[in-house]
Length: 270
Image 1 (cartoon, one colour):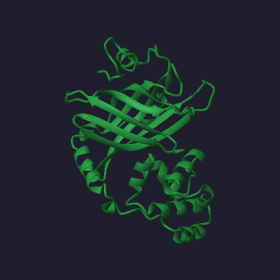
Image 2 (cartoon, rainbow, N blue to C red):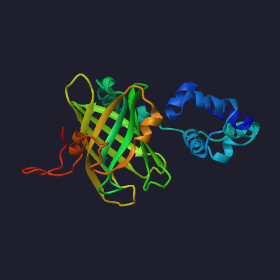
Image 3 (cartoon, rainbow, N blue to C red):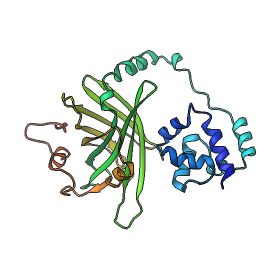
């Protein structure tokens, strides 16, 4: 039994409106999280690290005796955030929030994101994206899961950001949550079909390999649904050869970064 860890975890959850909100924001299955809260199980090292990053505590702190941890939480100074209403840009941000979430409801759900990898030139990267609405804002999480080699351990990177829709285009801006050293920006232009199947556009970012030069690539979002088998979807994420038969022909053509005759810029494709 892991009683102290469970008590500490339950205490941290009280700072949120519900356990369901914590699970949703952490991306952890509720039944699995309940096992941690009961003290019957302790999470893996990776999941424990995610929980600590989310709650803003150190790993050794959350494993403290519960009485010491409760005292630590009480005396630790809370980070004061500026009052948004006092920021000169507040009216513009409020206006962007108001107009940017209109008509996004039908785009909520899960997507495969596919593009030519910035860190692994010549290979195609597929990631899993989840778009959700919370507190009248639309957020998204982009999860990378890849192996450099067949025998290497799978690496998982998580990006979180905001979504806005302006003039029939979807704007996404996120940051990499593990190191906070990288941001990406994506612009998608959906078709006018009632049923969402594919979104195409451009992604701007930098290579995770440490190269400082920014680059741009075509990108495709394939809609999977409002609810999916997460484990199975993540297994399908990773690096692919450009001619891999598991990538359909239309996706392979849409993510090619060639510039056609008469074109002066890298433009999105349908």
